[in-house]
Length: 382
Image (cartoon, rainbow, N blue to C red; front, side, top):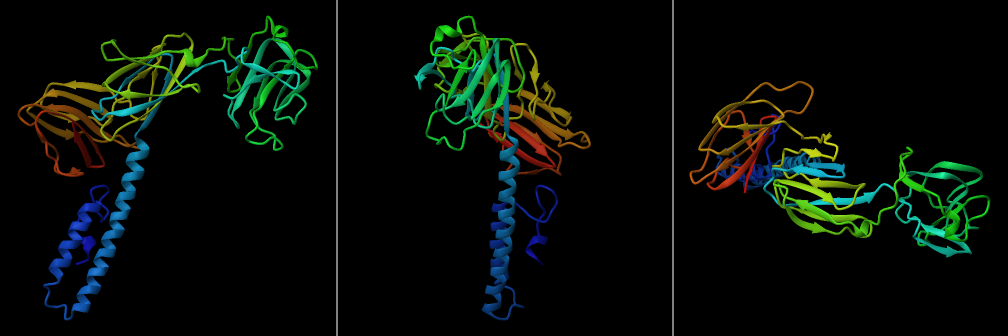
């Protein structure tokens, strides 16, 4: 009997298994076949063993690749807003990556003199990204370069504009190590004194849309506060000069906000293998949907028929018996939930068709979360 015929896959009924199972089965087959009387020589046994190990390794490599591609890529989410609330039921600690930014990327007070003209800092503009410069008073000359008379990376000359959309670039004659600046002119010539911009409201924002003017905000002076689920301040952060910071995920529910109006917070957080529910809201109360923003159902009954793509939450419970209702067509269907195993370990009763990754062992005094997709179950407790 071929090795692949003695097991059944835990993922999609294809004849393969996870890496550890394969290696264990392969070793058992090798040991058994050494005893077969119909293998006349040791050379035959060695050839057969080599073939079995080769087959096992191939299936192991396939399943390890499956794990990396399907679990790692599906478990990320992002959200933006002036105030962000994150519900993450994962008990595994992880880091939330954040970028704090104001809308206006033009700091009228950050300039130097280059070539006798005022050169404004544009270090936060990214090559290849589209930006829009708007002003309440039209500008007759706009240029991005290393010198006022240098090669043009971006330019508008001769036609006064109060709105100018451009793609940030670097002229091929300007080296990567050379700083570029923004030079502005009310008429054909560039300004030489900041007083020439008195009364101007200049906004540079990402994208090609023109929005209402907002003054530049010094991000390094902004304080980011993280609150727990009860709205109590737990810790504060100061962003780096580029607006980046990392926040430790310490609570199932966190609220992230700043002490400054009109500052946007953008977060990217790693959704651990057992983190299923996210609810992100901006200051306007708009729900920002992520890939796994499921309805939450608090459950008191030990026996439940689970709807797909819904998160079921038990408190401490002695026994849970679940059945799976029919899947919705055309989408991935996930059955997931959370429960607390108290002094007496919870008994989890599931349909026999579910194949669990690893042993289904529930220990006492732990919080567990589980996910079932295509009859493959994953459960983690902490």
